[in-house]
Length: 120
Ligand code: 5GP
Image 1 (cartoon, rainbow, N blue to C red):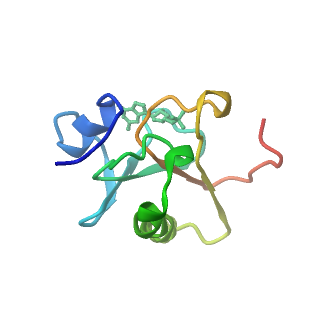
Image 2: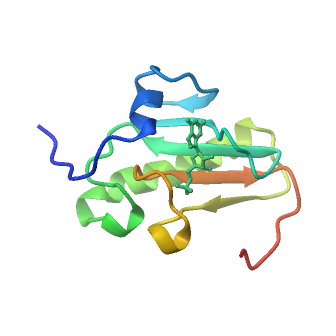
């Protein structure tokens, strides 16, 4: 059985398809779906199907290296599938000060407009 200290989140219901989402990419390990409150023309969330303790990036351990790499590569596939040719941004909010609101690790893939730097 999995050891995972965090409470279930809305993303569990998205993974189980209890709550509908617009899936743009899926493989055995990750699910990518459109953010319900998009901050750019393309705004997709990429999440591990198994949270496995990764409530946030700040909880990452060496055992998570494979899934972390897989999530980053999946983000590139999402950008490609979304037709982004001129650059995209990948954001991970970890913890309250970073405005994380859902405690199941997720990568935001943002694109389709000119981004600003630094972010707020
Ligand atoms: P965070 O603030 O934790 O980095 O990002 C959480 C993201 O999840 C937010 O951008 C929010 O819009 C998105 N979100 C929250 N609930 C839902 C939902 O039920 N469906 C979808 N597609 N996105 C959600």
